[in-house]
Image (cartoon, rainbow, N blue to C red):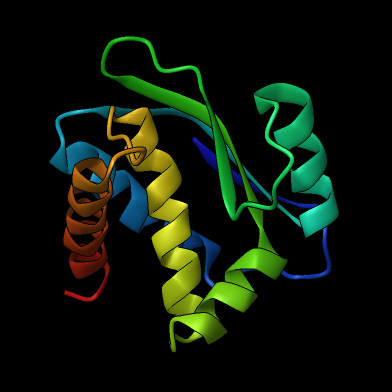
Length: 137
């Protein structure tokens, strides 16, 4: 089950469609949807988690707390709507496209994809684009 929780005034307009897309992406990798909670918040909220749990004193757009067991994907995925909005401007994207990229980015981490090295970042971007193409098909 995928749930969306809001710690900010921003709300997804199409939760059901986004849920269906995320489930389709998960299944395309041979995994099963478990308990997945998205928490959409602001920079301050996510920064506090980043410092407390990851010891990173930086702003970020997404943090995934992965509870996956075998092929059952479960996670708490925190997304800073402020970061997503700023990134959309910086990358010349609309907010929906950038938000969808970040939503699936969190899931891809749970599927085992990393993004620390340049090679991993390229692979992550490829996988994001692959999932985004499922949304647009």
